[in-house]
Amino acid sequence: MAFHRSTRSGVTSWLYAWATLRDTEDAMLIQPADLLQEPLLLDETIPPSSIDYALDVRQTDALRVRGSAEILEEHRGPKDIVQDIRVRAHFEGGFELLCARCVDPIAQRVKGEFDLIFRPSGVDAEQGERSISEAETEIGYYEESGLSLEDVVREQVLLSLPDRSLCREDCKGLCPHCGGNRNENNCGCEEKQVDPRWSALKGFSTGIGSGAESGAK
Ligand SMILES: [Zn+2]
Ligand SMILES: [Zn+2]
Image 1: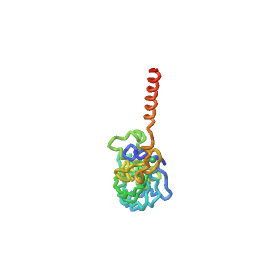
Image 2: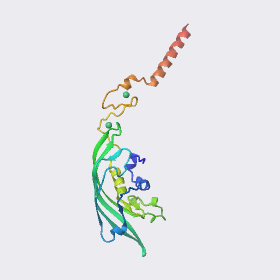
Image 3: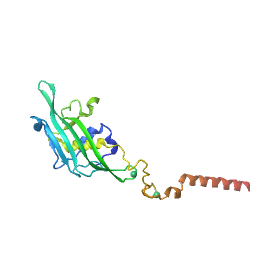
Image 4: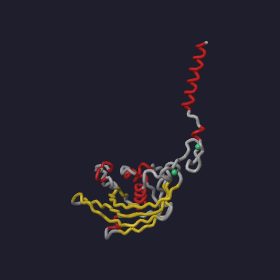
């Protein structure tokens, strides 16, 4: 699954990401019917490798998710009641990210909280799900089969990560010539490599020199 890091920061990615999520076999689906009597308490432990995050994000130990899910009824008309699902939770787990410069793995504890509202998919179809007002950009949609907790958590984990992670502030990155890790050894490629612009200038000055010589004869 291609998921560019820059999409993490924007809420615009929210709806888009919704369509790209995969179904996991043992995904936890939250359905309105489960919440009618009372809020559902969530205390889930998501094992590593059950969620695909991104090419440069890997979960390394159990991800704990604790919180609750409840129904929020939107009364849009006398007979038009929309059942939204509100999910509030805290998550925490161990992750491995890749350094944006040298691609070395970085172990990182990731935690965060969210409080989100999901509407039944299609309920806003008339006005277009993409044209919801600015204040409602945090609204997501759930399918008839239910709301997958894994999908919600996946998105929230990605949003909680920095756009770019570095193994250390002054990471020297990879050498563009030999691909070596410049934190580990100094390959010296830059000194060896002659900038092609300089060789062009050299040729140019030689040309002038020889021209002047021939002209002097
Ligand atoms: Zn690095
Ligand atoms: Zn090099």
